[in-house]
Length: 60
Image (cartoon, rainbow, N blue to C red; front, side):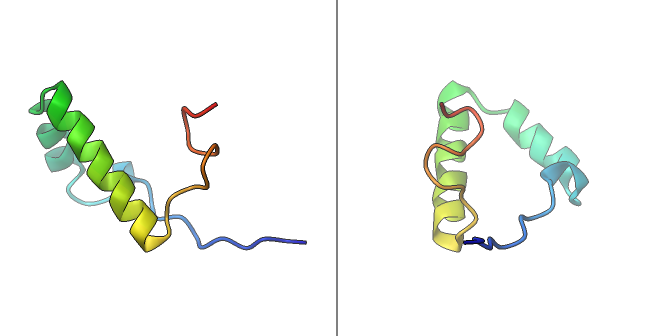
């Protein structure tokens, strides 16, 4: 059976405001980056844009 998934959002590198996002990221310490990534994951899960467990980049 074919499972259809929503079209993924455009990569951040193509989005307006990329330079600002880079400045924010570069200004964070390790804990700040960890919190920002956790928040982004939570938003992705709520909006249905998160990959299924085990399929995310870096997961083995």
